[in-house]
Image 1 (cartoon, one colour):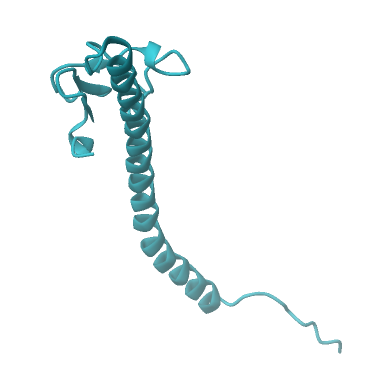
Image 2 (cartoon, helix red, strand yellow):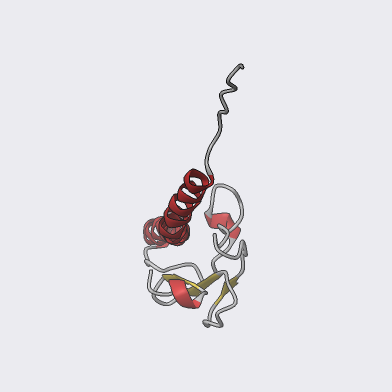
Length: 125
């Protein structure tokens, strides 16, 4: 009589693989979420750097052309090569407000030239 070789995985082998995948998932998912948070923070910092650099250039330009160094009264797209204020990377808003309200966009203080993100988790950048 001919012997038939059966090939495949036993139930125990399959259960072990599923357990290992479960362990990997519990470790990997939180790290992935942390990476998303870090990416958002980096994007906000990059956009703020762009805005602050444009304001510094405008401050210096005002000092040279008018003799009085001052920040622009409003933060508008004319300061940027794209013609628009950079988007807030978290909410994709381009709005600029003068008082923090937590709805997204940017908060600009024309007296000090200070720009911050208009979101609670990103105000300290």
